[in-house]
Figure 1 (tube, rainbow, N blue to C red):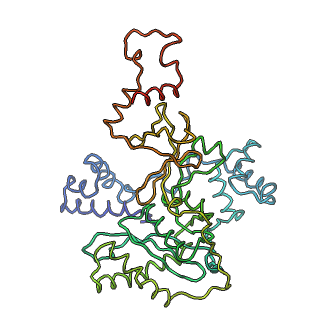
Figure 2: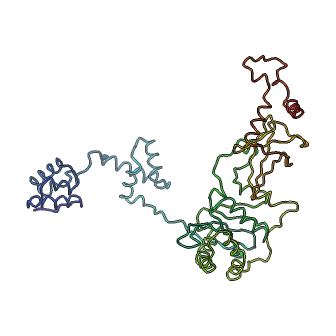
Figure 3: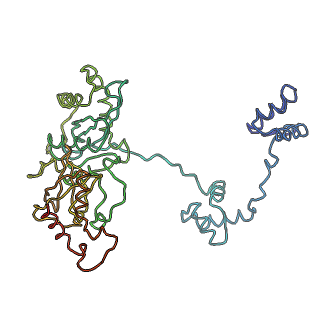
Length: 429
């Protein structure tokens, strides 16, 4: 037998199975099952194998030039033109293919890339990983605080996961931690509130891109008109305090707080087990009752600069009104506001009394207390039950509006001002 025959792994496997058929140790139907092809295809391959031997199992176009290949003269012309005009300009295969097409030398950019590499006119560029350098610590305490939540089975493997929100100062490595069932906005606000009460307002927070800290929603019409960016409830609180939120692009970017997660998972689980702590409430008592102080005493380090960049809480600012949830609602014609299928009545003795269609700010503190504000001034209001609201709405519907026959004259009730209607309803009561 002259020469060598190149065969792929699939073709070699077919030859092995068909040799078993030739030795009558397998049937063609069993061979089709082993080769995972149809029975008719197995018969065709078997006939070619009997007639041509192993060569009948290979693709017959192997080693032959493609019928769709470019002419050799065209290939040489393209390579010559690239070497004369585009190689000195530093053009790559993709750009060069576009420029050559303008000269009626149309060739696919990948084909051109392969030709140029064969002629040593172009070398494949390796994509190396981006080089990262270790970021130096900030110089001042309070200049940057890293913040992140750690989900772990803190109370043992037989207990569900809970979340510990950690705050780590970048300059000193001081840690503050608060635990809750989940990583929520409420947990983030409570953690930052504890930090401010203990150390002051930091300059910036370094967080991940979770929805607690960063939102990707489109701005509302009011935000577009005011030129403001969409903010989460936590982001609004930080804006009031003048704290910048810096989102990290990778977990490695906030490596100090990530490594503190490992320290807590190693030490805190043991502390909980020894103290028989099994609830979030008792866990927070242990954290604030000396565990974090001992941890900071062991691992914290002095900053490079002695100045403290924390700011005190401005005089007159109530942190309870900062760490809250706020929504804006439009005042209805009957001086009510609806939210979450609940109704709130603005009472008449508010001075000045807001007008219908005015924007009312609803503010929920973390303790659940609700307050309504109009132009930053608190309003007196009453919460209505669904039954009370139905009676209230029924009392404010004009009599003429209930009739099927309506005369739209100047004296009809809906032509009167909302203020007069509200005053008449109050006087009847």
